[in-house]
Image 1 (spheres, rainbow, N blue to C red):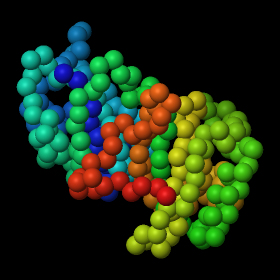
Image 2 (image 1 turned 180 degrees about the horizontal axis):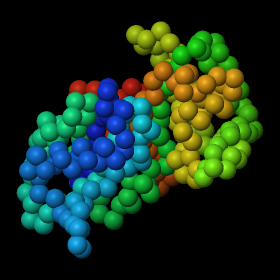
Image 3 (image 1 turned 120 degrees about the vertical axis):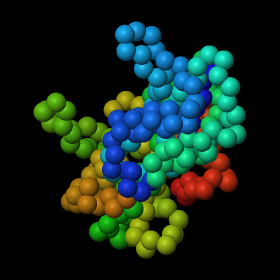
Image 4 (image 1 turned 60 degrees about the horizontal axis):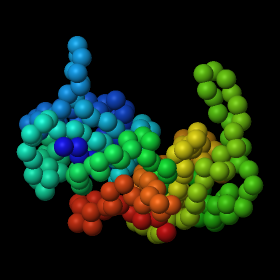
Amino acid sequence: MKLRIRHTKLGKIRFTSHRDTARHWERAVRKAQIPLAYSAGFTPRPRMSFGLALPTGAESLAEYLDIELAEHAEVDLHTLAAQFSAELPVGYEVTDVVLRDVGSPSLQEDVVACTWELTLEGVTHPELATAIEVALTAPTMPVERERKGQRSTDDVRPAILDLSVAPPADDPRPRLCAMLATTGRGLRPTELLAAMFPTLDPVDTAARVLRTQQWIERDGVRREIIPADPVATRTPVECA
């Protein structure tokens, strides 16, 4: 039996790496006494695969992983979310566990876009609105990147699928909703801010980086991997 799991990563746990997250999950599954399938070979590993890495320091309402259970394992899908959440560090909450579709691509292969909510520091609401208009109408948006010690300039405009101002919230700072493609070279949220506000430091400008959704495509229609559970403790914030 193969399962697909959706969970959050919020608060202080955001400073842990993608590899740390994998270790947290291995430990949590073991503590929950869920029988996993293991790979063959001299050093068997649990059959767990994770989705796109979340940048260290970013938070998320929509993280995913796949696990494969041992043969003949019997579990109750309705209680698994609570079982896993109880064994994970504070900041993780499992919001849904479903059966993985037979023959479906891996998470790494399947995700075509992510939606981000960026709380901005040092930017006014009018400045954000203007920057969005400029970005969406620009034919190109160059960003300088470094790979293996070599610097190059890439046009990241094709990776920007949508930009909008997030609805008002308790925090008075402006918030940017951005849907960014993950195919090709993709685009990180801080790289987007570097392109939109070239005179500002993108790391300082991004007061909070929150991934709210991950998207796949089926028959030309974009949809979430697992739609958010409306009764989850933390319901994802929809971008306007």
